[in-house]
Length: 250
Image 1 (cartoon, rainbow, N blue to C red):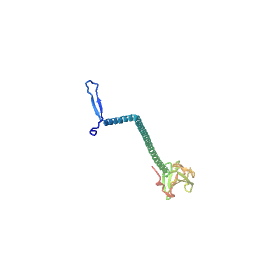
Image 2 (cartoon, rainbow, N blue to C red):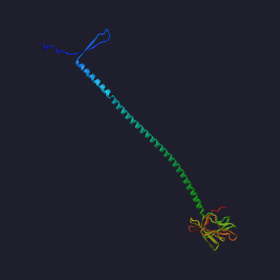
Image 3 (cartoon, one colour):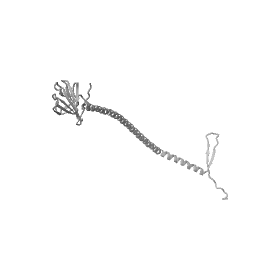
Image 4 (spheres, helix red, strand yellow):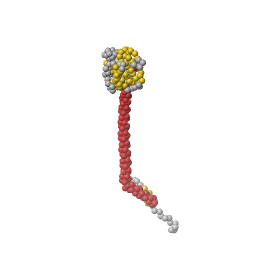
């Protein structure tokens, strides 16, 4: 008999009712293990919620701290970017200033180059003029005169009017003042470029040995007794024909 008797199963009854008058009560039978599972699940959920709310403050604080750290990093990067932009702007300004300075220097160089070119040209012109002043190309008389002849020793014989002057035909230095057996006196002028001119006349000499003279400096005064002039020229110690150098017009 004991063996045929079934084990009695325990169950829990859940009654659901309402405040309405005509509402029937509903009963639900729940196995104990199901109820235990539900209770365990509810405990887990409640424990999770309690743990979440307990640590929620710390979680938000950590997230807030992390966000603040990120914001600080971003702010630092933005400041670094702004600093780099300022450096770039400063470098651009310096480059612009250097370019302006280079342009100014180029203009100064151009002006200096033009000035130097003008100076070189002026010096060349002046040098040419000075060189020309030392070339014995002028007539050795201040007034018109007649040339009588050119002798075998390449002496040009001039007859000059009274009160005219024998003058230096170019700039130079008086190297010799001496007596001349035929003309009375002679004056030698060294022009410093290989040319030497010789003036022979009976008048009184107006220059001294060693004296610097310029083109047109008076060497003799022509009188009725000293109307003849003998004029010679040497180039590098060799006599040359003065007519090949004289610039005679008229």
